[in-house]
Image (tube, rainbow, N blue to C red; front, side, top):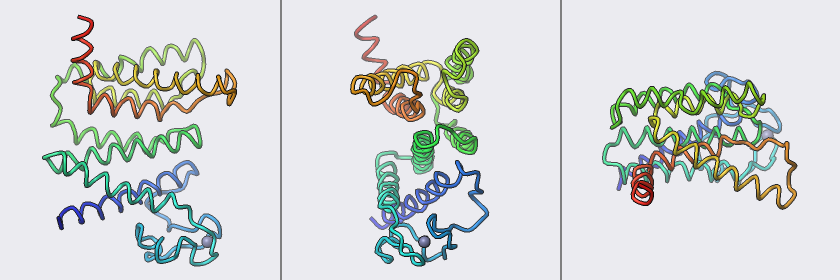
Length: 248
Ligand SMILES: [Zn+2]
C-alpha cells in the first residue's frame, strides 16, 4: 500500500513536468532551465507554489501574487497522472516496464494537447520518445527486421504523398510514425495507422456534418495517431488474432 502512495506521488510529479513541456515548448521556452512563472502576472514561482496538487489546494486555486484563477486542469492532470502510474505498476509485473509505458503515455498526451492547440509537434517530445522506446526494446518480442521495416512502411508513402499534395500530413506526424513504427514493428504500425485514420475520419465527418469546419481545414491528427498506437501496442495481438480468425 505504502509503495502505491509513493508511485502516486512519483506519477503526479512526472505529470507536472509534462505540463511544463506542454506550456513551454510551443513558446520556445527552455523546459529545464528558467524558473516557472505565473502565466498571468509573470511573477516567478517559488518551489512551494509548484508542489503537484498540494499547492493548488493550499492556494485555493489562485495565484499567490496576482490572485488570478489557476485552471483546474493542472491539479486534475497531476492526479490522473498519479493514478495512471499506480494502475500500470499494479497491472504490469515489471516495474521498469510500467514506468516506461507511463512515460510513453504521458509523452503522447502532451503531444496530442500541443498539436491540438498549436498544430505542431515539438522535436523535444519526439526525442524523449526515442529514449523511452530504447528502454522498451528489451521487452519486445518481434525481430529487429520487423522493427526496422516499421520505421519506413507508413512514413515513406506519406512522405511521397506530401510531394504530391503538399502538407497533407505534418512533418511531426511523419516523425511520430517513424519512431513508433520502430517501436511497434511493421504489422502493428499498419494497424495503428488504420485505427488512427478511421477515428480521424469519423471525427472529420462529424465536424463536416454539423458544419463545424470546412473541407480544407486541417484537423490535428497526432491525437488520433497516439490513440491508434496505444490501442495497437496494448491490444494489437487480440485485434490481429480476431482479424485473422474472421478473414483468413
Ligand atoms: Zn499571477
